[in-house]
Length: 380
Image 1 (cartoon, rainbow, N blue to C red):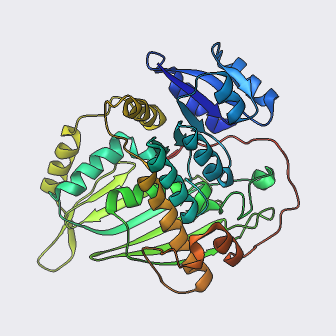
Image 2 (image 1 turned 90 degrees about the vertical axis):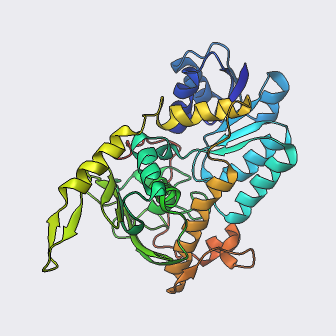
């Protein structure tokens, strides 16, 4: 039986609790850790965690009850310190996105996992969907040609009080605006399905949120050796329409799934390619569905990896990739120049301090509350 400590008591903690409870034959929640014990107790009561005790620190929890793994559901600025502390105590770590606020912190976490021979996993639940896995299989097969162009839109809407939560809306604590808080899910999925680009050009602005230092709109262009893509993110988009479109030589594959295929007529204009579209739909439908999706699937993989039943699918090295890509995007926004990947340790943007010092303050925070907000479903 794997003993789990939930570190944090907000919305993401509740999501993790619900998933862990589905695997009661493999694990049990023995601790809920939060600096505010009342909030931790409220989580225990809400989900009837009869085997869990409330603590205000990891050390207190690990000294009092068995803890084999910790689920980090904390503000991004705390991920590195807390993950390293757990790993150094011989505890496996599952952390929410973003992995950390800098590449230097990511590397510190990875080194701690390697040194202590413990697992470090990063939540990116959109990888664990039927659509994502089927499109990944089709892109890797090359049956419908190579990836050539991508059009990726991560559109969200947040009201004026969204950044009133104390840790939101600052480069130092949240790590960024729409790119790292919301769009990082889609950014990770893009690089998971297409690979990392070689170069990035990007611009950002704040057009609708006054209580944050960070961006609320951003557009980036990704250059691959033989492909080109556009990635846009927004917190001011009514309808919150989100779509990832992967155009190959022969077809369009997208999330949500609405495939298409065209071919050129003798005069060069397009006509529908019904045969290719039918073949694409048949290939997509023939790929077996996952047994579980999103958080449920990723947390099951984490538990199975602890037991040695399967490989960990999103480890620290995988989680780091999205941080490297966001770093390149922000670097391009700040410098006004194309940013090349990979980002090296000599780059000022490699550290949290260098990154934070370079980024602009669109506004300063004038309101801060301790309350927690609730998230929206992805691809709503």
